[in-house]
Image (spheres, rainbow, N blue to C red):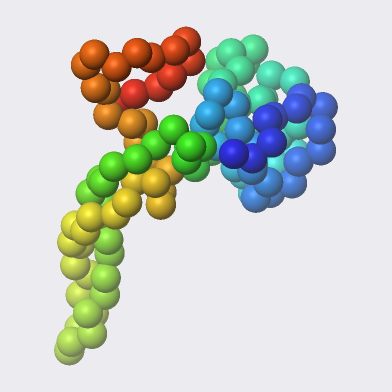
Length: 117
């Protein structure tokens, strides 16, 4: 997982941070100027959802995730005119850092554990 967000730190476009096991990326200029500002840290409610102008959610810390998900893949086929086709393919969720472990009844979970239901 990237380093936890630290308000007041200087962040540039493309810098990644984490908060509550979610990974965020600092947006491109001119919004990157807000990335280190109070009230613009991920999940902040100081200015409503204004933090989303500075940061975008790009994934999750992979230590908690497993499984397989389906994701659209766009391919372009050259014919007499360009054509775009969308297909689905299976991808490891851990490769994308996308899903929590599946909930398993009877398992002893601890505070802070995250699962998919």
